Image 1 (cartoon, one colour):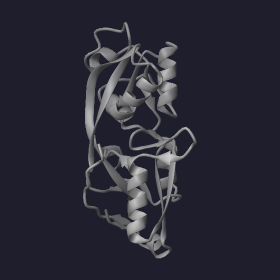
Image 2 (cartoon, rainbow, N blue to C red):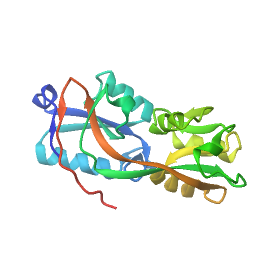
Image 3 (tube, one colour):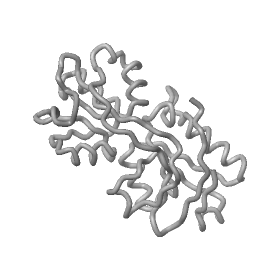
Image 4 (cartoon, rainbow, N blue to C red):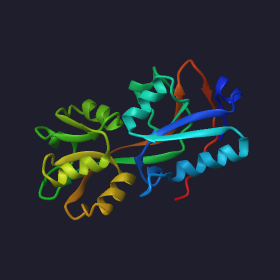
Length: 213
């Protein structure tokens, strides 16, 4: 992985932001430490280049805002969407990710976006699910700062359907003992993880890598 970050590399430090609730890639452990594949990767990059990496794991909406405000140099694990093209310069893809629609047990007949009409659908703030659902004609979205609260509200029947990437869904549904009550309704879309920087400020070039899974 090679980055071209101009001025910040001259200062020998860069700030990288990413979603703090995306296991196994990037999340906080029980002690509040930032861990996961992405943390390991940037630690190795720091060791090999001598450039210090300040890795900030925060809510997904805040991570995007920090990059666009100039508080960070690189954002991790971002999908390339038409809505983001004007603001971001993207790396090559490095991991394919599935996003699914999940429903509270007992909700049947949900097999495509057409059947979501009339339901409130939970989504994480800043998630590509929002644009995908809007493009499919789905309104009535309820946004959340993180995945845990979305699942908690589903268990409490405040919402009955949500859109979530498969990796964190598998992790949190098991961790919260929610997999007995919430099920995958259908595969919604897939996309590729990339890194990105603010457009017209600096550049990013990269060789792909394989994840550890």
